[in-house]
Length: 91
Image (cartoon, rainbow, N blue to C red; front, side):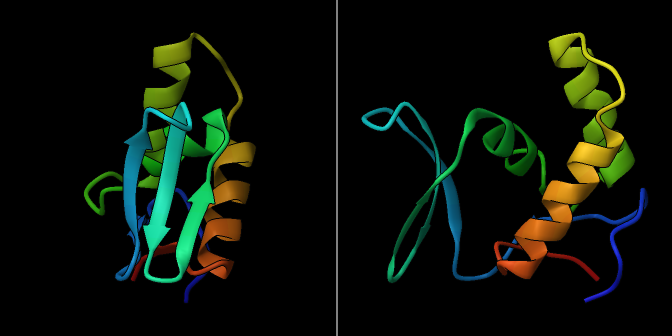
């Protein structure tokens, strides 16, 4: 997998399904062997990883939605980690 940059377009990897789980009160990643419970920040990033938006657009959307600044490093770090875990993929 290539390095994560602003133009990377991450998407949920095959075999995983992202969904809101009311009982858990959070987003979860479901896969055949189990479930990954995501914290609020991870859920907000993951739900924007649709393969259409690039990292720069994801950062901008989160910053505008939550009235925050300077999230680029955190989002890049999470996308990279999620790629290592094979939760996200990109070309």
